[in-house]
Image 1: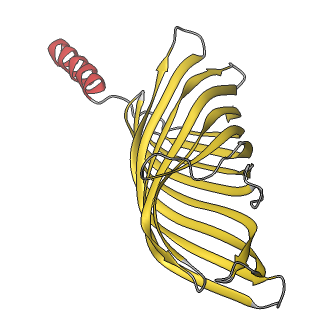
Image 2: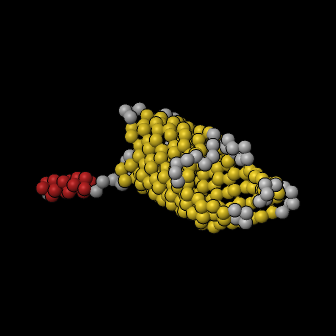
Length: 263
């Protein structure tokens, strides 16, 4: 009887150690807002600047949901970037992002991404005939819209035992740009409208680097650098003119994000 009791106790102990208790999977939600001090560049295939742009201000909300090793992220940037050319108004840009990721290591995350990118420019130009006489002045609005799909990798590196950490991510996305131009005459009230669907093939490389600090209360702040480089090529034609597009667009600058993590 004594030996049976000892064997039973040993068997119970082995069973408790062989099957670990199941860990509770937590869902962690972080919300915040970002400010991007973004400079815009547009260069042709030879690296020459197409127009002179200034530095603009982009703002937007941020959301992150972590459930175990899976995570979901969403962010939005919107704002204006000044154009130094006199016949252009400020360029309007909207950047909507979604990601779904899986953490393969406590500090490394693989993710798939979807980006909806829109930028719009308004301006005017004079139209002359073959003898050099002014025929008309046209006001126009150009809009580029690009849904882009891709993947990337991100990571964090704790710095010491406090809440300080370094972060970074890179990704590459592909898709097609829908180009739309709306041209209106200021003299005859005639309107021309042309669409070019999917003529511009796009490839987008993104880079994010910086430092962050998370307080014990859940409040966090990130300071970093973000760069988006998009290459596009194709043919665009309207009723008035046509041209071949082969350029590189860049939006780069410092980003500040303030967030709060709900525990």
